[in-house]
Length: 409
Image (cartoon, rainbow, N blue to C red; front, side, top):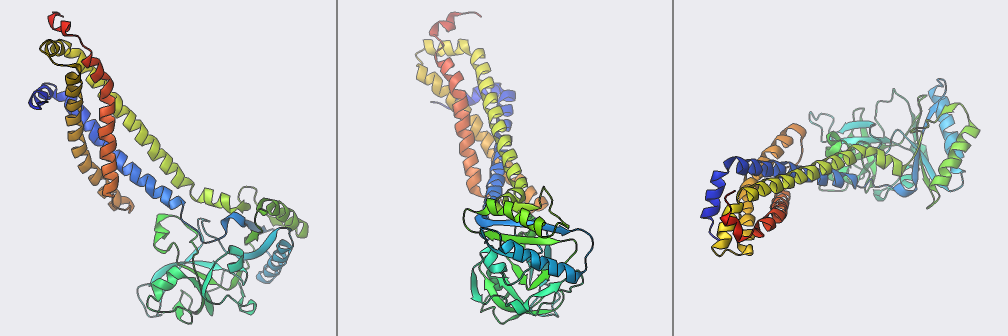
């Protein structure tokens, strides 16, 4: 089929041609970036925490009144013993926070107290000797804390532990050429000796600002003894989590009713913790998906509408061509080729727009650069969509009979 007659026809319909080409370009630019955002959000959803999520729940315990630090610590230790007696409970540990909670303690880590620039950021977890076993962490080097190393901490604590356990990601960052065990790191309050390394432990926050140290954590041997309360992390035997949660709630209030465990977030399974942590990411992925589908549907409808309009305008011309020997397949190929040329022009412009939008997103929201894979996928989708949308009106055009050439209207 000759392209020149098609181009001549498009020049006579400049407004409609430009309208569809621009619609395809904008759709491609938005859909490519939307697909990229969806992929990033879904990948974010599946990031591992490093803990035994299926068998863990957390209790947010707050005390009534304002007991002093010593009394709070004693009551916490009693609670831990009560929880360990609950049927189905495997182990319990107190902490200031846990992975995916959303907020907690963070600190800068240095290798030398004289450093002006931090070596790394890190999440800070306060823990006792049961922390590693309760969360199901894997100790890859060194040892766990000993019971006599666990201290009692309040708000005046200056974060200067004598010993610490760090994650492998932090160890690799701080000591890339050797073993971290036995080395000294410096937190804001002073030095601490690394006595152990655990394989994986995610940060408390999943926000983008914390992505630089998402798996770099420091575990400090202190119990957070505050009247405002703290968290009890409970690990159960497989399949007994839900029953243990109900029994734990009853046991805690039976032991000491002068406490508050909020109905909304006072006791959460880790399934609920993960769901809440990534609520915004799921919402964004769904929103981007809906926008993409709507834009594709509008673009397809525009192609169908414009092509149908052109077929109505050209019925006599089509009839003349049929009378001169053009087959139905010739007419069908004509309209399919015409739409392919428009779509091709639209996707070329759309590719530039997609890259430009992504560069703006990178500078404004610290997103990653758009992979060319998503651009190619978007181009293929738009070209196939255009050909699929034009098929029905093109087939109607191919059924125009030669007798149309003899009609005056």
